[in-house]
Image (tube, rainbow, N blue to C red; front, side):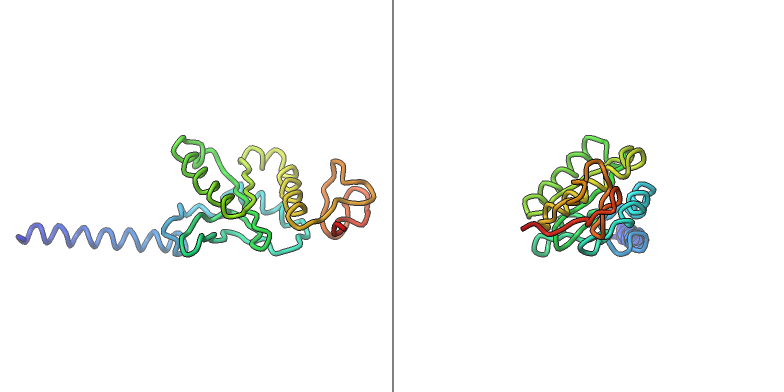
Length: 175
């Protein structure tokens, strides 16, 4: 090879190294990430999810693997219950290509036994407690938990320590 080609390849290598290193730093070491953790809609949903006493730890940005292959990184997840929660904004998820890629990842999660919950930004901003209630229903379903025995949880926001609507016993194990 002649020297201009070698110089060009060397410059390309330096550029790729610097760009890749900057991307790794920006995304916390995750090559596949867009670096958009803690978006406003994620923070809004997290604010409301944090008010609930869950039966297990709610994790942020959990790397879900199929063997050694990364399936996806949900915004929030319950590892033991295998529930993945996504807070999607139209800016990054509304294009045909993004919807297609998201559906492949989420179908793969479902195939591997995960419950997949997807909330759009508008839903999170306008009705955050509906999102929380949907998560509660998934957690209750996966963990064999019933609603409040006193009021049945009709249109209320419940948590595992007691019912917010009526002060009842809250959730109890089925059976």
